Image (cartoon, rainbow, N blue to C red):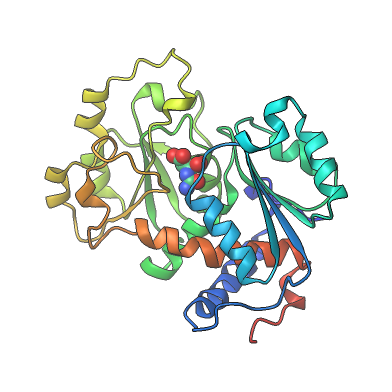
Length: 309
Ligand code: NCD
């Protein structure tokens, strides 16, 4: 049984297959009839025990575009709040004929725990500050589609790297696809040890001169332990994409952010709709890429797929 808990679960050729498949699904989404019957009679459970807009809606839409049925559970509306364990919730969903579980949870390792039961394929939609592999795949896809590729790119990951599961998956994927990754963050937002091959850049002004992609992260206030003494003014001075800086954005730089954006903190509102911003295109890519992931995980590989309906 194939799970997607971490980017490490995918071989290079599988990453390539998912991105290629996403391209076909992207074309399906441009058609007047946006649905194909690939996952007809299958049911996807979307369990989101933590807040989500983009990831939840795009997964639900992706499943529906593939003709699967969906069941959505949120943290507050499920027995998880009554003290039911995640394992028991998963067993229950198995008895209720679910064929796949998409899980977002605040604990690192939650998706792995459920995946190890091998009840159905599990797709990690974010576990604590560990990983968010489907975000990494949609970001890579966006870069391939709109910037010409990931290989050879210099990518600055800026802001609260320490608490970011997006950084956890994206750094792995970007490096595997041939990019050079830099962190641009104050010491209190850096992990204790830098991942292999990742270098530091002092501030955003230097990153704007040296990098092709400025990938911003939200300050994950809900994950701050209280030990980090966040100096919001100092942070803005050295690491935020302010309206002033945006005016000096070099022509080779693209702006990315997984959302949700905290306008006025890591970037100013003007940056979201700037011509060099890919932020809304990242959201759009989410549906096609998650269709590809569901098809890949639930349909046993791309070799057996017919997408030209
Ligand atoms: C991220 C998440 O939830 O991990 N958002 C997302 O899925 N698009 C990033 C964040 O919450 O800042």
